Image: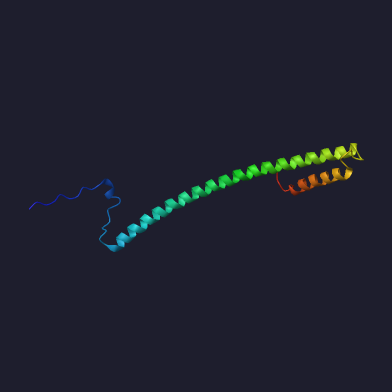
Length: 121
């Protein structure tokens, strides 16, 4: 009668011995550890995705801020130009009345006022 040689042991078996999975509680513990690793990995992936979404949102916000600052600056310039024109031509010119000029100035100032909260630094 020949006996089978003992199974080869790895170096890690002394640190982390193989569990006897014949015991149901040990099998459940192994499954729980596996699910904890899976959930940990999914959590890391979720954090990376959320970081990407946050970076993308921040980039879009910066683009929108630049666009709003451009619109505000344009409205400020047009209002100032229209006021200077109105000072030079207090009775308006042919085809453009002082009322039309004042309406334009009011519209530009309204735009500037609406965009006053935008921090253009």
